[in-house]
Length: 135
Image (tube, rainbow, N blue to C red):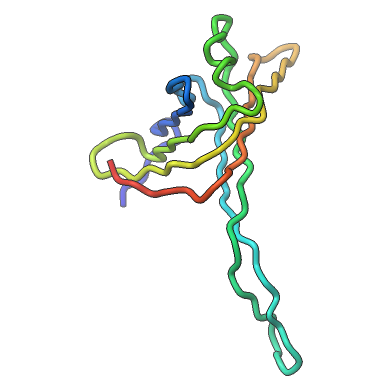
């Protein structure tokens, strides 16, 4: 598989109101799906025995450069907005993989440093299992 840069990523937030691209001004994106484990260790075991259990909804922060005319974006990022993040790690080229991640947005947060660009971070919470697809 060929390497690719982070700038190749395409990230869409799809809600009942429509679709908003989040990758156009993004700075950072992080998605770490997780799993709960059941401890099945018993008396004579000499090493921990774990059984995979249910998935855990990942926290998904997306940090973007704030734009002065971003009212539409802010509307899509309203608290408790449910939808799906569609994440293309290597872009939308033929045969690339993508993930559809059901999520709810916790709303936008602003970071405004004195001598730096203003950013908005949207924190999403994965609400169900993701699906894998191919372009």
